[in-house]
Image (tube, rainbow, N blue to C red):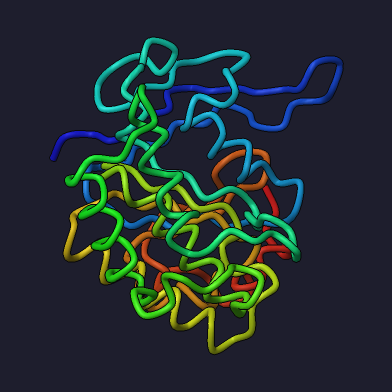
Length: 238
């Protein structure tokens, strides 16, 4: 299978700070659904930022779809849901307006075509929000808001979808529904998914590969192979 992402011997440190990641080598095949977990401060979000070219490694090499990441220009192939994305409680934007913004971003003139509008409707349908298209985001539950932002990330037709703590602040039922939605999107669209979280209980049953990060990769394999004590990432030791 072709590689969607490759990190080779990567180190990263913020300016004047200690190393966050050391000697990370990591490959993701196109179409994989990978959960990346670990304790707060362990480097999992930094790894995601490196993958999305939002940060550059101190040492080593990052490639996206076979191209050096620092030369990668086709941003429409990347979908990103940042940590607890939200507009604000009083934001008047509707679900359709939020999702439309994800499509307009790929259009240099900012005008939506008939093809764009169809993609917007399909994205809302895929996440189960078509019936709430005119509802302001402020009137949605936390889980529904996250679905709207996932639709926004999906509407440009990305090949790689990255989500940073997408279940933070939502209840257990919404977490389960979200994990099921992502599994279905991965299966139906073939989109590569990187799912970052400090815990992985909600996603464990739908992913085949789990990566634990604490300054480096301390586990990479199927969740069923993870030693029991490590099911709480705070117990992971390098």
